[in-house]
Length: 611
View 1 (cartoon, rainbow, N blue to C red):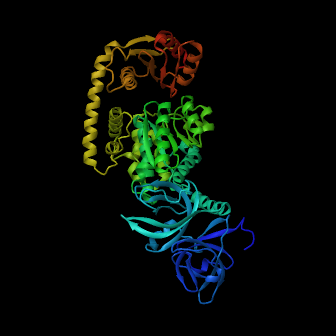
View 2 (view 1 turned 180 degrees about the vertical axis):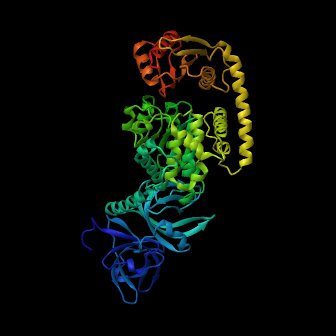
View 3 (view 1 turned 90 degrees about the vertical axis):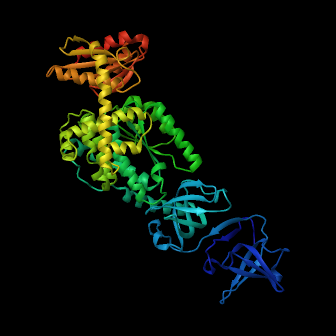
């Protein structure tokens, strides 16, 4: 046999037969039995040969491992072997020479053994077998491998490896599963070949269909390339079993944007094979209290992601930020995502800061193409959801109207989306649903309330319950608003500013009910709406403040809140000023002891803004 140092000993896979055995090669076998003329050796359950007694080197017992060299394969199928005893050698697995089967075709192969080449997308250890989720260019499937209860099978296989596995296709609780007989990590050149093939095919499968938008819009048309990019990345994440964490602002607009994507993705997950509860652990929707991605948010998301990665062998997630994510306030959290290699995309209509873009793989924002906040996140989200999965269009086509009304959009698109939602949902219906969402989310706090929110948006297939529930929530919300208005309106102070704007100030800490609905921002908004209605054609700014924050609403005064915040931050030493929002709607934080100088400077800046 010559030098044994670099000798390769082959291990025959479970479903290999004589075709895979070659003369001159060494194989790992097991002693099956003894005869007067020699020792019978099994190379696997299907293939056995004989070591003539003159070629036996060591005394054996039945079931002992043995290394043999193939001398000859006779025409009748008998194999002549000799025992070899190398001290140093490498083992290599031999798999059956079959052409691999696509995962999308295994439904036609129940009860048969197949060869699959694909990427390991998840490794989940159960109390019984180890479950490997495999992704190829056509779909996703689970393979089960069992050594003994609760013991990790194929410990050499890691998340993200490209493997060849053979096994029998079974039907388990209405789900297809492959009972793995053998699995090997492919050699580098084979890995490259398979990965290239899978990537090219997935790239094609992830490409969104070309759909016209639901309404006519120059801004949307200009945003189409970025919207398609985001839709493609979402589709790719679904097709490769990468979890998606969707963070959205916890108001009606943010919820509509996120739920549109949720409907598209969960339907796609149900379609593309995988686990029956994949839509719960591969897609997570989480509301953010602030209109930006707070450190608290990324900390929670990262904590869950790392635990899921350690416990369930899941990939690290992709993060999608909706109705937040565009501004400097998002930077601390985005820096964390970079350290952990989490891809992030943003769909937002807050005035964007360029600095965030180097942390994102996709960014849809109307300001990039000359639009403004009037194209709301709910409008963008619904259009992207249709690109992700056109099948959900009928369920979600009313969401942009609710978002537009809820976020007080003044863009021409608002009326077009309202016309699209009619006759089923009038503008008043949309306003009611938006209020119901805001009210319910206030009590849900950080929970997504997935099924409750579906009822409010009439996505549960129970229109009667939807109508009753929305009516109840609107009644409760309006009663709470009325109580708040009765308490606060007598305390509103007013002054006229140098630019002719009418400024109204209210202390939401001293003169409003706390820790209940409506919260300070919405309270200020309600006061603002009343003042605006009483003064048609007059420029009105409403400033609601607490001990360490202020919220602003404006009609007819062209403020730029993010710029004002930056100026206040640098001008007032020790003020601790931060915040942001849209150009004419936003919130500002500062330290409590500096409230007076901050608020006075803010009022001065409002008085200098153009009307």
